[in-house]
Length: 295
Image (tube, rainbow, N blue to C red):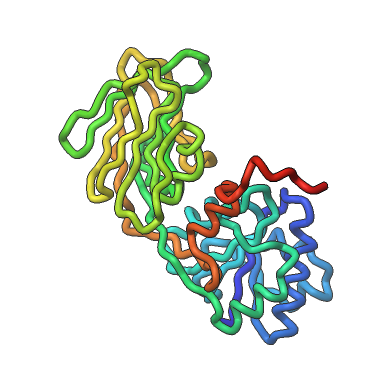
């Protein structure tokens, strides 16, 4: 792989410097590089002249792999926008947690050499999708982490009815309801008390957000099932949010059906680490509270 697309969250501190550093390393290695036009416009001319400018949605006709510079949110945005491509994504972490964007920014040269020499593995992560009406037009939304049906413009709870296939689950009085992939089990759903699910599990999770009944617990179902959510006709207005980023209005009486998408996110991972290594590192599973921290 020597045709590399660079997707950059310019809102991140140090993002432009890091992507220029990556371009210089890639050019020295004989690779070809593309970036979005607004990124190229902010590069010095001596570097920019060697870089192709393309919208992200057209990276697939140029690149073999996309390096994402940002945090986990940058990875999520890139995965959704490239949902119908087979491009592998590599995350360079300029954010906080780095659960998806797990390659450190200060190891760019090593990371690039590993990519150009094929020293990596690719894992396929399930995505989910739904179709809703936005401005009277049917719109397909994708998510890698989760869809959240959550309250909007009010501090009061909303009422959601949920079905798995044709089977009624429950009436949820809550701040909202999440439908998550295994990848999303360590994101919003984790803070709501949902289970951690290994990425290889062929399941989806339904997790209430601050439910008003203690008996409403997270539910794990097969990802072959379709999950239908309906906002009660007398409920307050809500929003359907994909990965905490794409927001669509969801009015009382509306419904949507969420299913596993035929699209997958292909993520580049290290050859010497596993998902459980990342859990221990990022969620501090190996931390021992009895051991004093050295300052």
